[in-house]
Image 1 (tube, rainbow, N blue to C red):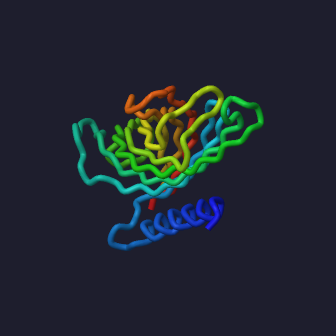
Image 2: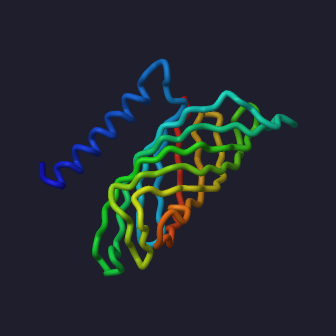
Length: 184
C-alpha cells in the first residue's frame, strides 16, 4: 500500500470505530460534537463523542462538578510547514480527554470546564516556527459555554498541545476552539 492509501485506510478505520462506539447501545454516547479551531497558522476540524460520568462532586446551591470522557478524531492543516509560507502539513489526531465541568445540577445553562488528555498525531507537528519532537502530545484546555434547553451545547475554549517536556523541542501550540454539541 502506498503511504497516502495507508493514511486514508487508517482514517477510515478510526472513523468507523468511533461511529460504532457511538452507536453501541450498552455504551451509547451521551453527546456528539463538532469543533473548529485555529492557532499558529493551523486550522483544525474535530469530531467527538462524549460519555458523562455519574459522579457529582461538591454539590451545593444547585451546582456541582461533574465530568465526561471526550473521544475525538481531528484533522489539522498547517499552512507554514517547516516555517515556509504556503507549505502545507496535514495531521490526523486521535485523542481521549477526561473533562471536569462546573455546571448546574440540571445541566442547563452556563458552565466552565477544564481537561487534560492524551493525543496521538499521525505526524510530528512543525509549523510556523513551532515544532514538536514527538507524535504523542498532551492536550489541555479551559473553556466556557452554555447548554440550551433544547440540548444544544455551544462552547469556547483555549487548548494547548505539548509533550510535557518528554523530549525537546517542545514549543507547543495553542488553539482557540469553537464547539457545538448535540446532547442525547
